[in-house]
Length: 108
Image (cartoon, rainbow, N blue to C red; front, side):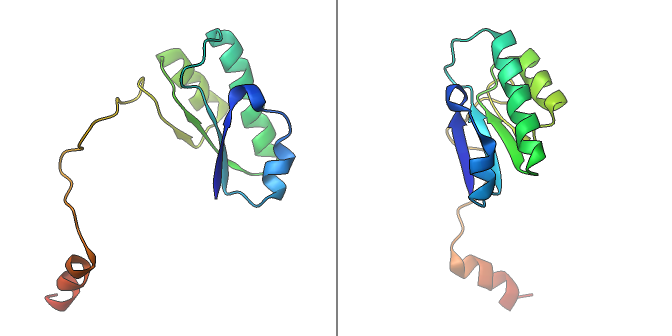
């Protein structure tokens, strides 16, 4: 289980850890705060989560500086337009069903 928290609502990470979540993260998408303020909150969240050995993620990184701050803070998973834009249909993927999975095993 994972939980994504709006950055403005970050208070006590111990509640998340005690609820047996695998990872906890924050969502920066659409936030109007200054980058300095966001970086400080990202750092505080990462430190708090590390005390409880929670995996961390940050969603919605929209600049190289915020991405760098997330990496330096030790986030396990990061995403946002600064890393890669969303695509309607990723290339190189195929739709598979259960039969496709077993066909490969049967024909070895």
